[in-house]
Length: 209
Image 1 (cartoon, helix red, strand yellow):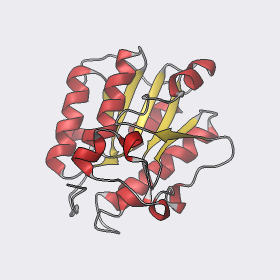
Image 2 (spheres, helix red, strand yellow):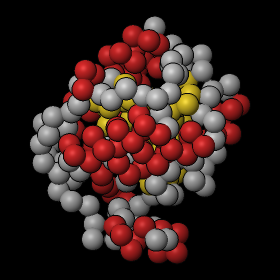
Image 3 (spheres, one colour):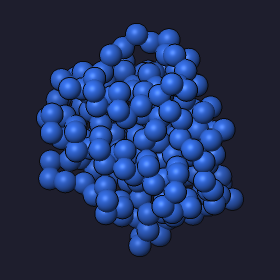
């Protein structure tokens, strides 16, 4: 039970990404950025200062700065520490009691800025028990750029639910981290085949303009 320790692995590169079934192109006037669960508790499991987590932090930071600069909304998810067992639900059966309050904060390198939106994370998908969709619709946004951890759990389920809400997901493959390269690749393949567009940080920033 609980999260595993995560060793080094190299992130997928743009030329390695599977082709998406979806024909969508990201647009700065339609998209919002979601920075998913970049809290101390989850990042503590990685080997620090090496791939995957070191370049992921760098790429997420680049995405956040660029999206803010072009006027896009930036959303964060963050689970709460010391959750009541009744609130945590079935997640406790798979992952244990969750984080303590002292490991709850988002890491300083990616700290939210004025105007960003921090959503309390309750379940795998960022849409569950949150007003993410409402906030997006109010801002005329029907595309969601997803980065953060973990690719095959919350990030994947958020992409799938976005699709089911008619929001186009873009899965930034080199701005996501996971338990292993195998699981990372599985998540990217699933999104490409079923619900979204895998893309690299450099290409995404270029397409946003």
